[in-house]
Each structure stands twice: as C-alpha cells, then as structure tokens.
Length: 216
Image (cartoon, rainbow, N blue to C red; front, side, top):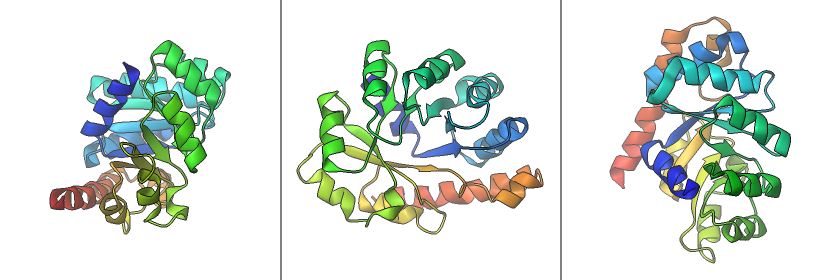
C-alpha cells in the first residue's frame, strides 16, 4: 500500500530538502551538497520552472541512494507530469482532492498538506494518517498537540518556517519530520556554487535533528 511506503520513507528520513526555484543547471549540485550533508529525501516543487526535468535529473544522478518526490502537486496535469518524471512520492500544500484520488488510484505515496481540523478529517477519510502541516512555522508549537487530541493516531511533518535555530523545537513538539526549502542552504552559497560550504551547512541541520531525536 502507498500509505505504508510513505511511512517507510519517513521512518528513514526525518528531513526533506525542498527544491523550489533552484535553477535547473544547479539542481544536481544542490542535491549532491545536501546529500553530502546527510539528506536522503528530496522534494522538487512542480511550480518550479522545469520541475519535472529536475526530478529526472536527480533520479539519474543519485539513483536509489535517495528518494525524490514532487511537491505542489495540486492538479491532475501536475500529477501526470510528476509521475512520468519518476517522482517516488507526492506532496501537496493543501487538501487537493484530485491529488488524493489520483494517488489512491495509482498507488502513489502521498504526504497531503493540512492546516485545519477539517483538512485532517478529509485526509483521514482517504486513509492518510501522516500529513504535512503547512505553514507550520506560522502556528504555535502547541498546535500539533491540539490536532492530535481529537485525531489520535495522526502524525505530522512540519513544512514552512523551519530553520537551523528552531528545528529542534519542531521535533520536541512532536513532529516526526520536517521539510526545509530556502533555509536549508543560504542563497549566497548557491549563487557562488560554494557546494562544500553548503554541505557543511546542511550537516548542521542534520546534527541538530539527531541531537533532539536522541533525547526522545
């Protein structure tokens, strides 16, 4: 089942690197720097120019060493493009029912985006109990506890506003994983192709996460 595949991916990977508007010519170098820093899970946003192409490039460059997914998959056109590109899982920023149905029919692992109790209820109706809380950084850390109260058994990945100085707070609050976009690698390092420095920066994210999980 696709839901079990998503659980397996997240059990092995607590940080997902989000590539949104990373230039195509830098995408593989960006991913390799993140890989060197310890990341094994990647999301390419489908509203990025040449997003589908970037998914194919990452799959070819990194192979079975990583998981490469497609984000912002909010309509059937993007679903088809992401699937054809070889995306191994989908993510949405919202409860996109067309995507929920598409992934269920095609047996594609999905991490659906939620914010409200209504969103959570809809995802549960489709059989998804692991969800992406977005934008997590705009909500109080106690919000996840409030959602888990009536929706016991649900688990959440935090996306939006995760930084090196607060990543521990999300895990401490009860999130099982985080997605990090522009905060993962400083823009100036990307512009300068300073990939060794970028790898060191990413490694700090992974160390912060490992330290907090080790306390649990």
